[in-house]
Amino acid sequence: MHANDTLANERTYLAYVRTALAFIAFGFVVARFSLFAREFALIVHGASTAPGVSTGFGTAMALFGIYVALLGAWRYSVTDRGLRDDRVVTMSSLTGYGISLFVVAVGAVVAIALLAQR
Image 1 (tube, one colour):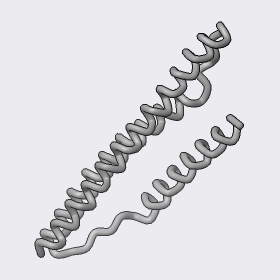
Image 2 (cartoon, rainbow, N blue to C red):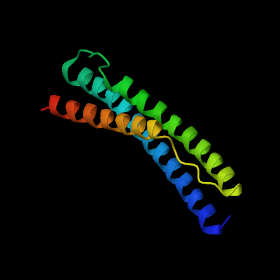
Image 3 (tube, helix red, strand yellow):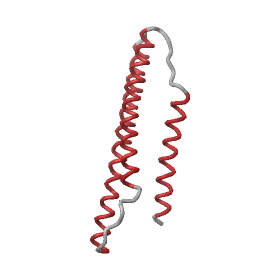
Image 4 (spheres, rainbow, N blue to C red):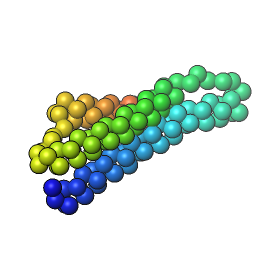
């Protein structure tokens, strides 16, 4: 086991942690924006509006951030064991495709929401 491999594994783990925190923070902002929009509508129009999709979407984003954090910890552990045994352990392509599809879905929901606001 080389130091470079171990350090690269740690950098990858930290990238998972940063990504997880970004998803959680973005989910919080999206969910709170819904609350802000309802309060603003109440002040301006005097009527309350329905929560809409923002609260559920923000919650889903935060939950996905938790999943990414757990996945990163698991990947770090599996890769570390592999490095100690002098073998390469890759992530399954199914996991990679699943994460990519979720990110595409997030982008689509955000784009549709932005277009609906026009």
